[in-house]
Figure: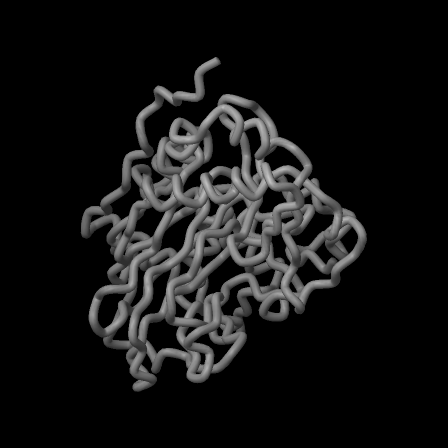
Length: 326
C-alpha cells in the first residue's frame, strides 16, 4: 500500500495591479456606513460579488477547493490593503471586525467562493471576521492572542463541525518581519511515518479537549482517531496542546507525528495584502514567535472560517445563519 500523493502543490496566486484595483472597487462597494459583516443580507451581497472577482483569483480558489495540493495551502498576494488608512492595531482580547471594511469584504467574498463563511458562538462572540493580534499580558498564551511559538493544530479540531478552510489576511506585519505562519500537510507527513504509527493514528485512542469557552459534553470527551477517511489521503483532527493519547502506542505515534510535522513544516511570512487559505482538513498550522511592542503598529491578521457544506451543521445553527451555536 502506498501513501504517496503524486499531485503537485497548489499554485499560488499573484495578482496584477489591475486585478488588485478591481478587487478594491468591489470590496468598497460592499462598505456602506451602516453595513455589518455579520448581517446575512450583507454576506449574500458578498457572495454575489464573488462572481465579479478577477478570473485568475476565482480560478485559483476554485482549483484549490478541488485539490489543495501537497502543502494544503494557497497563498494569494496583492489583495487590497491600504496601510496608510489602517487604524491602530487592536490590542484587546476577543477583538473582531463587525463593521464592513475592505479587508472584511475580501475575506467574505473569498469564503463564499470556498463555500460559506462560518463562526462559532463560543469563539469571539460568533463574529465572522476576527482579529488575530498580540494582547499585552497574553504573551505566553498558546492561542491567537499570544506571541510565543503557537504549536501545530487544526482549528476547532474537537468540534463535530470543524471548519474546512481557514483564511488569514495580513493587514500589518510585525515590526521585525519574523512572525511566520507554520504549516504541515498530511500529504507530506504520512510518508515519514512508520506503518505502525499510521495504523495507530486511525484508532480511537486520542482525546482532543475543547477550550474552556466551549461546552464539553460526552461527545467531546469520547476517544477518537486523529486520522479518518481515505487511508491514502485522510483527514486529521488534532491540537498539540489539547490532544491526549490514551495508550502507549498512541503516545508513540503522536510523538512520531509531531516530529514529522516539524520536519516538513513550511514557514510563510505574510506581508500586507497577503492571504493564506489553509485546508484545515489535511493541514495543521501554527506560528513562529515574535516580539510585539504594543504601540499600535503590531502584527494584525484577520481570520475567517469557511465550510464547503454549510447544511451539515444545520442542527447547530439557529435560523439557518452562519454562527454555530453549540
